[in-house]
Image (tube, rainbow, N blue to C red):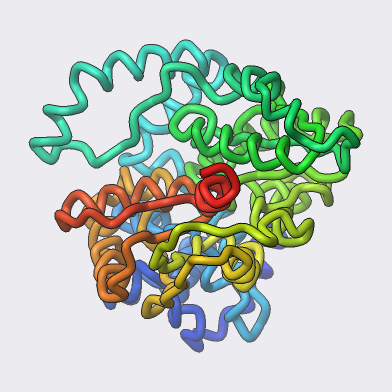
Length: 401
């Protein structure tokens, strides 16, 4: 979005308030400045020199969780998330909470493997005490070996020998940072499913971060550099699909790259969309689970994928799906939002875990590693033993036991 487009978007707002209907931050505090309409009004006020870009105002702009719930609600057609992104570019230097995060991200990107190696050891020795005293929030254990370094082992196991002799397709897996460093077992589950069904798999060792965390901090140029690296990699592939297990990565690549880089990647697909389209869960059985499904914001709002995960789960005999109240409501994670606005993130998450527990399901299934992190945190604070699974784990369990 250029400056002229930004001004045009801001001038469209008629202050109707439709955008507040599903805004998780507004609904949590009922404060006008914490809703989409308030944020647009403040940015417009700064543009017209009616408001000073103070620290308090900047905090309100960066408190948007970027869940995309408001995007299609505006009757005048404002692209609210993209307008917020542009506002953050202009205000990032005034956002004091994000100063250390920006510096940390800028330092880490060129040496990401080394940084995660160091963080793993710091986590091992200091995290338990800091978490126990409430100084930091829950974070999953950093994997000893990233998924992309273990993927070749799975590709060369006996599963290949047990899969159909004729390959039915060639696909690439876009791992994403969360799967690579925190949840490699999810990547391994996907590989097992695809290999069993006879797919040839390309694991993209040359991929970089999709850029979503950087955009959220106002680092648009840095995000664009990462996007171009991924696009260059994607354009070299000869595959039928590029599969992602993280809706934020999928949405960023599919919906946002055309807006802030100018290139479109049509082959990128969410894993639920791919598995359903290719009937990979058909005929599967499980010993029985009572499950409820949580809709990740970037999957349901950002990509418009809501019925597909339910249809996919419905293919597995033995699963009893119980819908929770307001399944589409945000869990409160939002990447760096859960770090910068810890209390507000937890307030949103507590409402979500309450709705989950009210279903009496023994397992909550979702399609987003970020949501899994937030739900695990809420599970621990609510002292419950409900299982939390990615939909890929459910299918792997039904397929392989």
